Length: 228
Image (cartoon, rainbow, N blue to C red):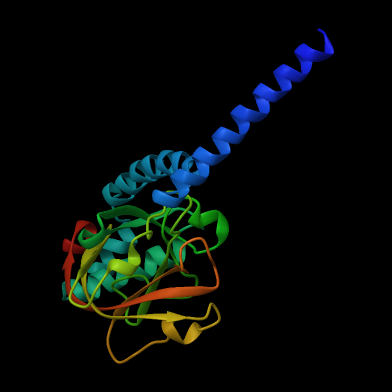
């Protein structure tokens, strides 16, 4: 190959590469990062299957014996919430979050570390699962890995957030939103009522701050083994 042909081929490769980089940047600006989005879509499908198996799992004889002593659905849901909190592996499917206002419908995983959040929204470590007393906190990406919380800043007071767990469906009503520093751990502290906190980086394409949604639990409906 002559030097001229080699240079021409190299120029073509550089032009194509540049065009692809510009396309990637454009897609990220108007939608989300495309490569990680494909990965997240595949993982969400796998997690959906995992979640279905979890929901269909039969309670053990020990669980059934414990349920006999729990008179209300609320106490049964709390029982299974504690059990799942203790048994769930990091990054495994534990529930599903639905936010109609922003067309969000994603499998939620256990854990908010980087590896877990590549799969979907994740429940923070050391916080209760829905059904247990206290503040549940869920984090999610805005521009990468499916960008489940990309439009979280559109959520407003009065909007509904539904979290479906294998043992119950929990409906929360948004009370307010805040923009805080990443170190503002007080947002997940326990308050006098059960609530849900959602968090995501803010603004888009930056991790400088966090956009926080505070939502109050308004209803809990038992499902699965918690109805036995």
